[in-house]
Image (cartoon, rainbow, N blue to C red; front, side, top):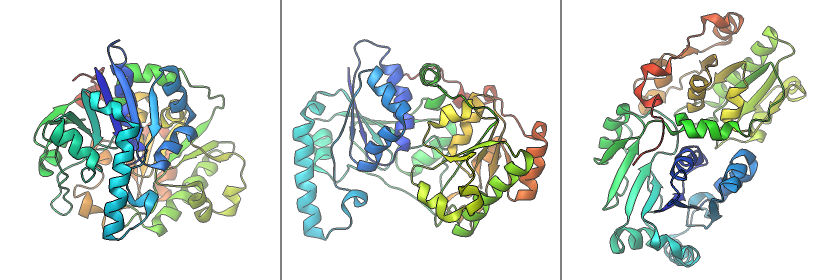
Length: 366
């Protein structure tokens, strides 16, 4: 069977598709092809060399073939947009002609290719089977204030991670759903990624960050969370090795513009593009600024704290507040509370994955 993954939205898609691909390759008949349409996603494979090593070791074909998007090509007027889109679509099909032999096409929730000639040919002419996946290991719920209505393929299944996602999928018009569990919890993936664990340092604190956003994080809160995390960790342990992992849409330069100079100059504080699962496995403690990376603490049984201040617009998109807090994670919103739990790590709640069906799917099945 030929499986083609078209990666269009963000680097977070790689975290979803690679565990699935590792399981698919257990069947000798599986042939995998990854086509990436955004330059920054393609470059992220070079940055996270764990993924590069896995792709190479599994002999997985992946390539960058652009389709029109505002990130790489900017805003164009209507006619230029139309012409450029047609040219890129034709080029895409010429360079990836084998996609017409694929049995299954995997795309992301928002269907970024829906207005391209590529989609029309695959969907309307060849009537390919599409599998839809979300671009992050997140929990999503239906929200009347923020609705998506992506173009649906004729023949599709939405592969959701949890029963909790059903209402959200239905709200977007995705009615054909199948629960597969959270891919990062698949046993073959955990085993595979552990092969590339060359971490040597001990006493590691990991911060999973998130950049400012009009709904999720104000600039003021971002700066406070970043600096107060570092201040509090160093107050507890002056010899700590601190690793700050950026969100896929975050840069090291953004860290530097918002951190105090004393922390930028501290050699024990490092900005890292190491794989988040490698970091989690080797962490003494994890701090997350409301990111799905906190779920990896469950895999490796590590203490984790969600450190987050809700922006005034936060509940417009997350009406129930943080779903990680609702899962049971210890959540704090100021450095006094953070200090208490860092100083009393046994008070940090541990999440038992056996209580959650979505964390106990052993492998990918379709």
